[in-house]
Image (cartoon, rainbow, N blue to C red; front, side, top):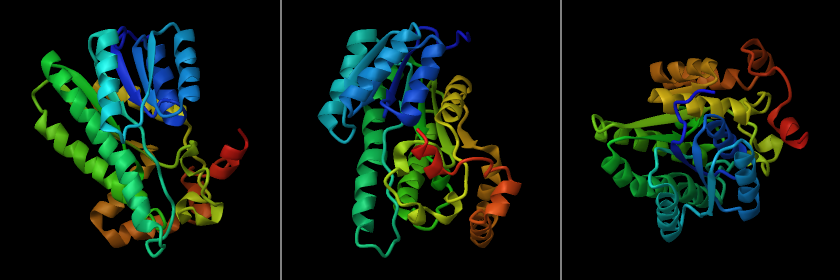
Amino acid sequence: MNTHFANKVVLVTGASRGIGRAVALAFAREGAQLVLAARSIDHLAQVENEVQELGAAALSVPTDVTDPDAVAALVDAAVARFGRIDVLVNNAGIGKVGAVESEAFADNVHQTLRASLFGTIDVTQRVLPIFRRQGAGVIVNMSSVMGRKAFARFGSYAIVMHSVSAFSDSLRQEVAGSGIGVSVIYPALTATDLLREADEAEMPPPFRHMTPLSADTVARAVVAAARRRTPRVVLPRRANMLLLGEAVSPRLGDLIATALSRRRITRLLRMSSGRTYHQTIQSR
């Protein structure tokens, strides 16, 4: 077992399922002590049990990150129990699918902003003074490939993921030299419940044939980024091709996104090598 995080205190939001659960378990295997936050009391208790079965101490605090009082109570509970926080993983958030012309689009943006951006900002602002006093700490923010390149029908989510990216880049420069690290994770489509309610035909075209990443793959990347203080991690690495194309020219980025909507292209790039997102979710 790597001992880098032995007895370190790791606070994970959105910890009750998906990537958050996988991140909590990954840090527990590294010997960390976990503070688990999410809205679902029952799922949170289950993850707490899983963490403890791995021999790690855990504190679960039911928390809605859109409620400032709940966020304050979360951070206070973490410090009261463990005396410090060493790593913050901002993972809580939601995602909505729909065209820009849909009546629900603006509301989708507002809802996603509250949970995925302002929740992240609030938790971070509560934890930063603790990191400042300690002279050390790591913040890992969960964005998405969509935080660098937007896809059709996922505009509301992309807007917010771009915002998380900008917030993280700004914060990283502001805390430079303070002992505080800031990392951003940009996973491609992942096998979580984020899009469970979306009809397959409504999915962004590039996602319809892709085989999703596993939550465990993303969790391992989070742990590695926190250990190395890597500023930016894109998963899978092949997705960097899309981001490079977008950086060179929006037209080139759009062409690559269009190409990824074709099954033969995603197969050639080994991004379609098994079940699709909906097949993966339905098989659970």
